[in-house]
Image (cartoon, rainbow, N blue to C red):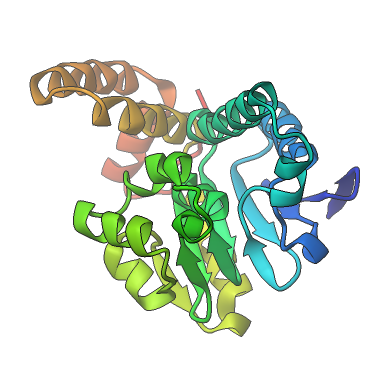
Amino acid sequence: MDITTNEDVLIRTNASGIATLTLNRPGARNALSTGLMASLQTELDGISSDRDIRVVVIAANGPAFCAGHDLREIRSAPQREAYEALFAQCSKLMLSIIRLPQPVIAKVHATATAAGCQLVATCDLAIAAETAKFATPGVNIGLFCSTPMVAVSRNVGRKRMMEMLLTGEMMDAENAVAAGLINSTCPPDALNDAVARLCATISSKSALTLKVGKEAFYRQLEMPLEDAYAYASEVMVTNMLARDAEEGIDAFLEKRDPEWRGE
């Protein structure tokens, strides 16, 4: 296993094609400071072109998964320009997760609130400990969770989303599964194994197919129905002509395991 650190606020480990990015500001409940976001951005930018990395896991150390933006940092520079730069940086980071060729899994061991909940919602998949909780509580401090709303509302139904935004109350992991915010929950001591199993399953697929499929999934969501079918049909045609698709179909017909090349 390879282990690297990025200014200590983020720890990256590589093992068997899995890159784990661990938020490491436990004393600040892993609040997304500009430094932490910059470190995440740097790692994601590098991973995007790394064919050895098949899956990315975002995890965290300490008592919380992520408490959102760093309010102390925000209050230290109360100017419009600083706020604009902060939210532009955060939006770029979230879009980078969506546009990353590799699937991204949130491994949520504890509470995720505000921009932390946004981070969970932005990841392609999320598994949480059954003790984890989620909230968009900005309304409690006079700051509506407008940017977290963008990601969370694309996972959670409208009425439940408005309830989260207007009350700021916590949602437990069981209800987060029911609402569509996370995929599944498990006992805290089973979280590592649950995430590892999911990573292994995804890693066994063609990297090219995952890249094509992830991009197509997010693009078609924003299209009218007829346009989405036209776009998805073209993606299917292109995908069918790829070497891995031909190999996968032949392997299925010949009742053997496919040999992926990512091409």
